[in-house]
Each structure stands twice: as C-alpha cells, then as structure tokens.
Amino acid sequence: MYDSFSERLAYGFTGFDWWLIIVLSLVGALIIRKWPQWPAAAAIAFLVDSVAPFFFRVATGVPVDFAFDIAFSRVDERGGIVVLLRLSIYFILIAFFFWTKRRYGRN
Image (tube, rainbow, N blue to C red; front, side):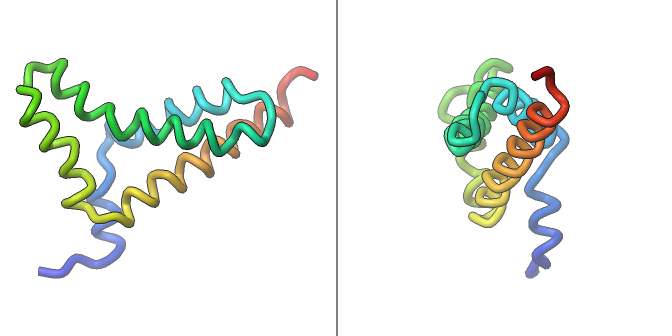
C-alpha cells in the first residue's frame, strides 16, 4: 500500500522523460552564454517539460480534455517530490553541460 521513497522516484520517470530531460538540458546549456542565465535556462526547460506531455498526446489524437487530465496527473500521482526532483535534475545537468562547454570548448 505504501511505496518506499525510491520506488516512488523510480516510477516517476519513464524513458521518454529521461530523453526529454537530457535533450532539453543540452539545448539549455548550448544556448546560455554566462552563468547568471543558468536559472532561467533551467526554468524554461522545466516549463517545456511540463507542457510537453499535453502537446504530445494532443498530436497523437487524444482529445484535449483527456490529454490535459493525463498531463496534470503527473503532479497528482507521483507527488510533488518528483516534480522538484525534475527541476533539480535540470539545474544539475544544465550546469554540468555548460561547465563542460566552457571547459573544453574553443576559446
């Protein structure tokens, strides 16, 4: 009946979620030029990640009201900790990719 903390986090991410997180983090890291832009890049990536399931389901032929219910259920079913973890993962990955770009990129 009660899930453990790790099980809840593991069920919170699918393969599509990880693909989207990595791609949006790479795009965010490639777009920013200076470190102060890092929080804005993570917030925009998280915003795109939040609305992507809705548009994906609408594009595949799911009715709009049902697609909205499915997209919003990510917050309800998995709990707020997964939502905060997604934002944290965006911050960490964008910082890592941007640091790598600055460290090993052409100067």
